[in-house]
Amino acid sequence: MSAGEEPAHGDGTGRPDTAAALQEAVLDSKDVRAFLEELAALAATRLSAPDNTVHAGVTVLRHKRPQSVASSDATAAALDELQNGIGDGPCLTALKLKRTLLVPDLDTETRWPGYSGIATGEGVHSILAIPLDLDGEADAVLNLYSGRRNGFSSEDVDTVEAFTAQAAGSLRLVLKIAQLNEVRRDLTAAMRSRTVIDMAIGAVMAENRCDRDTAFGILTRASSTRNVKLRDVAASVITSISGESHISTYFDE
Image 1 (cartoon, one colour):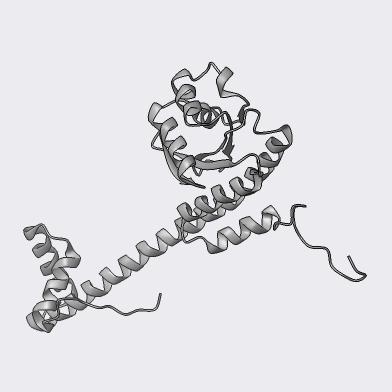
Image 2: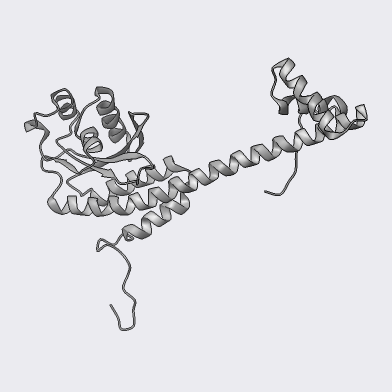
């Protein structure tokens, strides 16, 4: 490196450091699933070597049922679905115990006979599963599969544990952003409904020469009698006056 030249930021492999890569994933992801897909791809890339391809998947526990939500490739997706379908395996055990679980050689493993035999038949010989600490937001585990026996070294375990610790922080942020977006969508829908209802109230007041409370009562009775949502009743009132089949509302979000 020449004098005055800044050292490249990275993890020693010529790739961007983990924190920067995760930050980029947070900024680029459209939703939680997209972030988890990026997370799985990043984990697989970081651990794979020319003689050891690693496949990565993410399983999330929802309503006490495990679901495969992201994977680095089709192989990881199939291996996750296999384990979830059987209902037992190293990754689900790690998720339940909330601790890292390393299986260096599935051929000599006796804890999950139903799963191990099928997995080895698919070419998997070692598995590393690391739960993501999400502070109660959800339960998730990063599943790593290698076709080699002893495919994960102790250094790999340390690397992945550090990686998942950073990833969990990023995922908690993504989950909070997703929750805020959901609240925003709910508020937007409520504001649109309120606007349509207010427009209909004004129309009923003008037609019946009544006050606001009376007009609102007319709409609510119609909603109850027809067993139709109040917003839909209000939209039908506006449509009958304007002839528009689609009611557009405008407001500052």
